[in-house]
Amino acid sequence: MTERYDAIVIGAGHNGLVCAIRLAQSGKRVLLLEAANRVGGLAVTEEFHDGFWVSTGAQLLHQLQPAVMKAIGVRVPSVVERMATVVLAEDGDHVRLLDNDVSGPASGEAAAFAEFRQLGLRLARFLNQQFLRRPPRFDGDTRRLARLGLGLRLLGKADMRELLRLVGQNMHDEVNARFSHPLLKAAICLDAVTGTHTGPRSPGSVVTWLHRLAGQDGAVSQPAGGVGAVSEALAARAVKLGVELRTGQPVDRIVVDNGRVAGVESGGERFESWTVISNADPKTTVQRLVGERHFETPYLKRIHHYRSDGNVAKLHLALDGLPEAAGLDDTDFQSRLLIAPGEDAIEAAFNPAKYGEFSADPVMEISLPSAADDRCAPEGQHVLSAIVQYAPYRLAGGWTDDARDRYTDLCLQTLSRYFPDISRRVVALELMTPVDIEHRFGVYGGHWHHGEIGLDQFMFTRPVVGASQYRQPLDGLWLCGAGTHPGGGVSGAPGYNAAEAILELEQRR
Image (tube, rainbow, N blue to C red; front, side, top):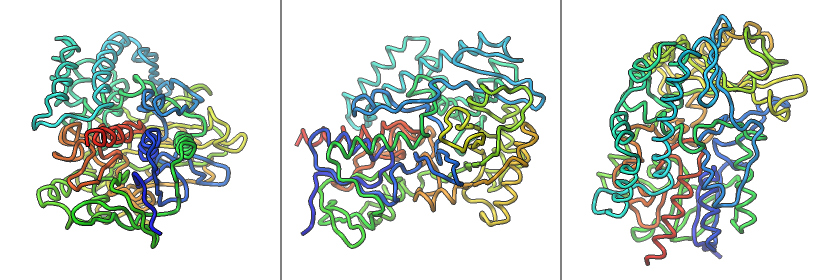
């Protein structure tokens, strides 16, 4: 007998879990199918070497939506609530940032930094209001357009003018107009481009910085047990609410009958529902799970041109102890550590990626989760996790074993300029390129945001025009992942918003 559900969610990443929870809270019978043998997708904590655990994808939290977590009744404790940022200097004269404070050689620019950050937070709070709503359409969606306009007006004349000025601005020019110290400028620029195929000079990079500030009011935190603890807590809540969660069960296809979704097929089984919500990325959903023959050509063209090639690698190191570093104390190792000598160095690292090459001088965001959470590594040992920019998905010549080895060596050489003993402390390592992310997590192009966050793929146009409100141009099909508004990062907002849109549509019928 074929099982029938009120809704079927594909993918138990954090957004799929949030969507399933919200629907279950409303009394829906929900089936949640996950291809992997564990929940979380890219928001997962995994053992990459005996006793060494790391957050495989996103390594810290900066966008998790408190309003969403409160609404669904989930709380995840942190071992570090507000992480400092240390921008490393080879001579040990580092720049330290925490909230509005600046110490070190850039301390003389603390007032200017605080002013700029406070402006960013005000604008990010406005964006965050929009992140927790469906974006308006431009075809008569007057209620949502009016709400957006009112929000802009409430910013006040000065901040509204600044937002409109900054929307298309590049961060390189913005920081050079405000600051002089290269490490301070680099810290801001790196936050504007991390996880993207853009450099500080790319138009719109200020918007990606605001996107990063939204969610936790600018705070960066380390959850106890790693980012995977968020997914585990969500899964426990979903099961408690009656969601039927099945791991190790990939979906083979979304069933379409008479021009509308009718369910899914998985492992020879068929599960029926008039509502199917995909937490997979837009291209995977349309091209593989549904099939292009079920969509109109204009929509397929927009999906085809949706930019979703990843440009970031993850490097995980198992270390036999804390590495040496001039000018760092034990507390500093509980901070975000950035390797970026300046804003121009970040742009220089990006330039080769435009042509399918990786930089000889990569820039990095580093954390040592074991410095604050002893569950991450055996006693006295440590784990280092680095987000490495830039590593193009379409590397010229491909990610061969030789290319991987050369890139790994480059990363270690870069690290050794700041941690001289790092190579001899390495017990084991893991490098994940965008190709690895694609194969391991089923994300098209290995882009961990499920697609670029840019002016043409943001809010009203994410993922594409005509499909920005989670509902797709195939009756019964919805998206709830990072490829939808408001985009990537561990936030939960796409999943929650998608569920709200489904429930609202049902109420209108």
